[in-house]
Image (tube, rainbow, N blue to C red):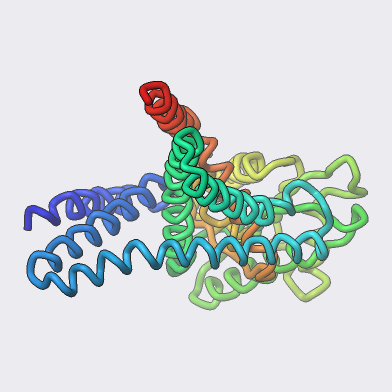
Amino acid sequence: MLAYAPALLFFVLFCIGVTRDRRRFGNAIHLGLALTFGLLALIGKLSQAHALLGGIAVVALLTLPALGVLVLAGFLVANGVQMVRKEGMRPANLLSLLAGLGIVALIALLITAVALHSRTLVVIGVTATGLVGFVAFQFLCFVGYAFLYGRLPVRRDADYVVVLGSGLIGGVTVPPLLASRLERGRAVYERLTARGGTLQLVTSGGQGPDEQLPESHAMADYLVERGFPADRIVREDRSRTTEENLRFSRALMEAENPDYRCVVVTNNYHAFRAALMARKAGVHGQVVGSPTAAYFWPSATIREFAAVFLEHKVVNLGVCLLLVLGGVLIWWNR
């Protein structure tokens, strides 16, 4: 049982974190570490009990990730090309393509280093692999826990449903991405009112420099045109960012009901990061996601993870710096 102690420790930390607040990135890391140490302990025990099965497990542990990396690289490049075709050449739309090409470049570097028997290239390749592994582990934790968080049941005691805004087409029209949020917000509102609740729906979004009206007004008009009761809508029309969406919506809700509870609606790729931001902003509520086009999800998820990664930049960039310094020391002492 001692072999499973690290896995058990991190699982206990995960359970404590989830109990205290589900909207914590630390929960994702603890769960990832618990699964990693648990898998390593299981393989170790299997090797001791059955040498053949243990050997097969070790080979699988080494082979499957390598094949997965190749498949992932191809998928990201293909998705990146699709994103550019459908959404244009904006930097945010290039993330999956750049990630895929980065993986291909790393594989080429490692192959070249081995083929040329270059110590310098080997050190660079191993250091780069360490950096990618560190970031990839956190990314897998982020995606895995975001998947779990997105499947939590919607709370029953909400007083408000808050729909976060996004840009308008031509400065006036609700785009499909925002329409998806509004439809999910409406569905949540109707489900909770059917259980006997008395709720209000907050449309949150200010007016951008290229917009003819605040996003919250266009959102409210969209709902009213489709039969939603206008007197149940509260418009928050000052915010320009997600952080302001949450902060200003919180102020409106607290002014009416200091003990409020809410459900915040955004797109599924954005839900977990919005939950982290809601916790930071002191919003008492759960975040749920609405469907997003499949081709849009990879780049959007990478962008969301990058933002979360940089929010913890002192620790994360510190670890990256240590890995680079370790590589430099190995090369220097050749």
